[in-house]
Image (tube, rainbow, N blue to C red):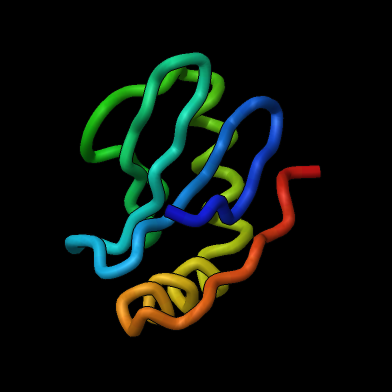
Length: 86
């Protein structure tokens, strides 16, 4: 599973040919959550509130790019890194 970003100790990954909805896997401090790219909300797992708020902000900043990466991952095309939160 390629790592697509890392910021403030949060690691964001995306699987190839993963299930819908379009999402990223976010890990922080031993916790993991699946976060919907379309609205930045978690739908599985858990993250600390502050980490989740940062992920939601990052998703909103990069939504179009993340949706393009999701399309690429479904087509088994190479993925690229996305800038972290500043």
